[in-house]
Image (cartoon, rainbow, N blue to C red; front, side, top):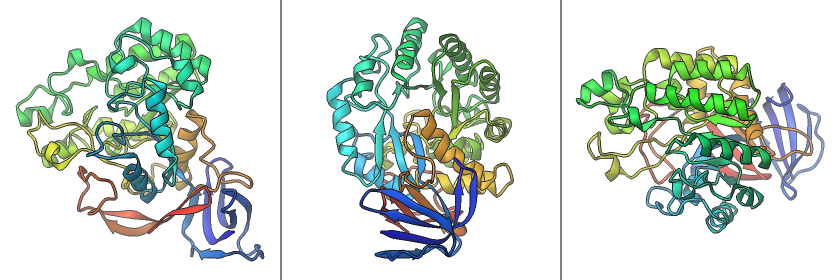
Length: 424
């Protein structure tokens, strides 16, 4: 048994916050009791005095790349899970653009079984189409039955409208969401860099906002018509935020995610940090960043997801047009949420925890994102005021534009299934 004493509990599911003591049964992996501070009298094998730190549901990230199978020199399921635990995440949903892709039961089983060897809950999406080719649907019903959390061809948009309609109908029948990467390649000359000031700086064509806007507009209309759960991934433009806002008035089954880097940085970062700030979709303008924050504030954007995308130093050292897109994010996400959203008054800590735990868990129907007696003992414990310097990562990769920055929010414990999986 484990007792957490004197922590400031913040539970977005019940709206409860205040000083509570929590009794955890490590054997069953559940929370046994939650009582006002000082009311627990049970003997326990371990008592941790949290001295006023925040105790919240373990964070849930529904958009990560662990590169396994196929690209394990960048990351693997074990190192990715360790990075997640350090960042306070107890549940992650992997993307399926691996090699081979997660388009068949064997690869799905490989990923899920390897995930069970880690200390956290590792789920994965399966692909929408075979081999990410956009031509033939996977056996979505079979993959759903064997544990796929949802479906995505993340990294590649679904250009065939009829195929998308069928995929949405099938996924809805399975009770699983479809998550879409929204960039129309017909508009893009050079991916990863906004077609604006940043592209001009590098003398390239870049990726214009229309690439995202056109796909989001089309896909929201289809999802509303099909009455299916659709999540717009890593939204980057003010126009796309508004399209989601209007679509939500027509359907409760429309969702959207924002990354910490898109609510923190603009295209100026690409000029300053080069390939370390190259990503798909690209960082855009200040008005887009503010629109994303407003979308988070008013509920248009349901969740924060990192799009954790590890790459090797050698790959990121290539010229801007050759280097791969993406940055790592699991170990800095909570701190960026505190610094950019809570400390600046856009969200309360309760609202941040809802965006980073309860809302993503609800979309993927995970038993996570809440603190309750009899519920899972998955928790993150952190000091929102204590600062740390971004310099070393548990991830295999270090492709982050935030290296060297001082940030608030230090995770002291991550507990998953009643066991301490990270101790800061």
